[in-house]
Image 1 (cartoon, rainbow, N blue to C red):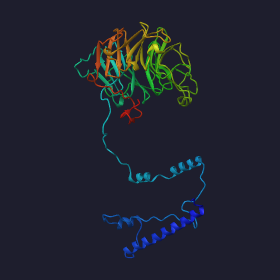
Image 2 (image 1 turned 120 degrees about the vertical axis):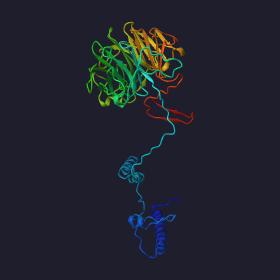
Image 3 (image 1 turned 180 degrees about the vertical axis):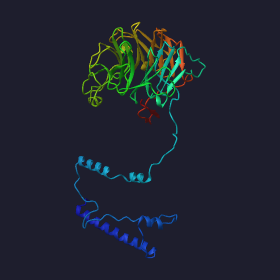
Image 4 (image 1 turned 180 degrees about the horizontal axis):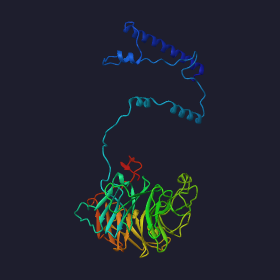
Amino acid sequence: MRMTQTDRRRSNRSRWSMMGLAGVVILSSVLLANGGLPFNLSSEGINAGRKPTGHPQLVSVEPLPEVAMGGEMCAWVPAPSPVLLAAALRQERSASPSPSVAVADRRGPVALNRPPVRVIRDPYPTYSAVAVDPKNNEIVLQDENLFQLMVYDRLTNTPATARLSEPKRIIGGHDTKVEFNCAIYIDPKSGDLYSVNNDTLDTMTVFSRNQSGNAHPARELSTPHRTYAIAVDEAREEMFLTVQDPPMVVVYNKYAKGQDKPLRVLRGNRTGLEDPHGIGLDTKSGLMFVANYGNVAAHPDGGGNSLPGRGYGEMLAGSGRYEPPSITVYPIRASGDTMPLRIIEGADTQLNWPAHISVDEEHGEVYVANDGTDAILVFGVTDSGNVAPARVLKGPKTQIKNPTGVYVDTVNNELVVANMGNHRATVYPRTAQGDTPPIRTIRTAADGTPALQIGNPGAVAYDSKRDELLVPN
């Protein structure tokens, strides 16, 4: 049976009459128990008169809101539209803090010193990039896990029975501004170390050759967010940096610092830059090589020879897509929305998450650290299209695992690989291919120690079906 509005009013009047009568009876009983004396219902009176009894006590009396004669406790109004209702709810929430917030405000902040039940963390250095200093006979490795630069003698070779090899010196600590450091360049003349930060600080730091420990950088340059790799044209004193998103290559004076602006910028929807990572230069041929993961989307302004405005990073809705990984080739002085001269792309290339690349100008070869297949791929500088690598270094004997850094040492005719997947850097003859074991290994943990490869995790999820933690990096 449905009730009319009149029925509801009558029912409410009866309910309130009964509640009022019950309230009078209860209050009279309480007054008699108090000897007929009036109660002081202020907070001071309540606190002063309250004595612990071990039982529930009356602590306050709150008056009910007044109800208009013949009215209802909740007035009957037509339901508003969903839009107006949502707006009203938002306004109510913003105007009136919730009871829990009010209680928290009165309670004040509470500091909890509670240790976690367990921690998933790799306590050992993990190599993300490598460079060789032939002049000083040193190898410099980027440790992206513990945020430090590690300098070793070039001939360091960790014995199979040893836990690790100690570096000659380490640059790391809060003052260094080294964080999520993913690329390294060594000035061939001065020995200065250029360190590129990727995810957080948006700063490239430069350290003099003799600096170590928690040292302030000798020079800093503000860089775009998600800067990844570095290459330098020493003859022109120009420094090339890749930026993952918005995808671009920014070129600065080699000695730029502070808020200096780039000399030119390569970016745009026609450039073929798709989540660019590694970069290498062939100054003899006047070419620039860029390794791309393949993630791409169109951006509002279409590109240009300048850093994008804030809206550029928003991307056009529905334009995102996945393309095959690639190596795109440009004139070394390309800028603006310039199309590549050539593209190395396709199934035969074996490209899969190509990270850093190293160009051997003397022998006309491009070396690619192919993270996704645990391999080093070697292409010719004139290669194009769906072409197979000239050589592939891959296999269990190579000890290559998730390589992200690669460096061709033409002075000593060697190839050095930084592996994120097994706490080691491995050294080979320059022309090594197939399942060739390294001639030297630099390890930072005991053989067989797993490398977690956790880098700037932005979230964590629990898969209850498989009882697994999912950690995107």
